[in-house]
Length: 464
Image 1: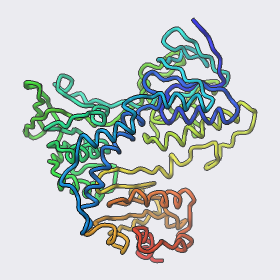
Image 2: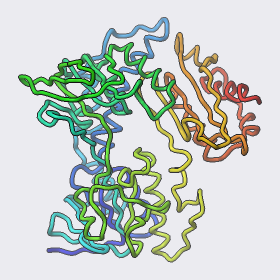
Image 3: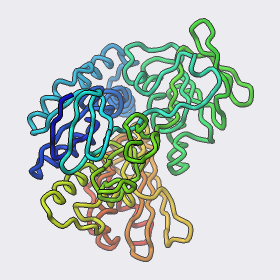
Image 4: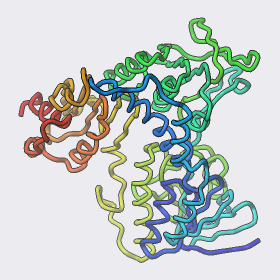
């Protein structure tokens, strides 16, 4: 059994792990990055990148059709779409990510890592890595599979299968109306599948304002998705290679593939957490510096989905940058400020988490989706009906919401729904993080004619 020592050992080489290791190295430390699958992680090969590569062609075609005078194809070419997706994922080749790690001064190590003691990691049972200062867990999350009779034996897809497939199923059933379910339902119906979307509530995207879920549902229906709302899957049977789905209320569907998109859970099942007194299968609770709260000695950190705080790649990368900086500062004996919004605290996790749902229409949100009971909040909802939107697409339909803290007169939440509203989101994020007073935000004049004119209309409706 071989032994090696680094200042920091990071488990999990997705964007979160890469950022944690890179920031530690930039702070003057040595770092090892351990990965048991592909360097680059879920986002690069199975999630963010391939899913958006599948969605973008359909969104672009739909956008072209909304502008008179533009000739557009009747349908997508699935072969070309898959080829473009494979370009972005490298067909699973992670050699570029490995080269990046080495170029950044990080030692990439391939194998399954388990924590086997304080500041000790064992890879594949035979290679021991010791950390002088810290171990960082960045193992992400895995799909949460519901306990439905017959589901395990049916021809199912996970989210990975849905983003990696090179064939269009004739009939696809999607179970779950969250972000993954809504996005993949639209991607595959536009690629030519017949899609049934099974949603437990009255609309998809239940964590967003009702108008967002309703708009996305309308967009899905317009593309031909069959919506089964206030429903649920009760039993699945394999019938000659196809899935027979029994829904709540007695409805029966048949599908060639069943995409199970019912959420994700932290990937902590086989990390050896029991060796340091932590239960497996649960999120790692961390403070705002990324330090795992329940482990003595202050050497174990975590960032990203594995903490259960904000299951988004960009938010995990943000937390990882904080973790890397914190570890480097503490190793050098420098004081680590625990004050909100310092470089050593992931304060935005609590106040300003931005997210885009890349459906058509898009949903872009940051901060609160609505008022909080007992808080001094006022909500302003308007249609996105400005010159920039009208020029952007014929018959442009969209909505915008701001949530205002009326005591401080600052924004605490913004939601946009409509074509291409993702590009509006960072301005909202800056306004919330910067706590820009509304009377100052009034002087941020939006360019004419752009969809950003909606900011002026929102502030006018508020009363400025």
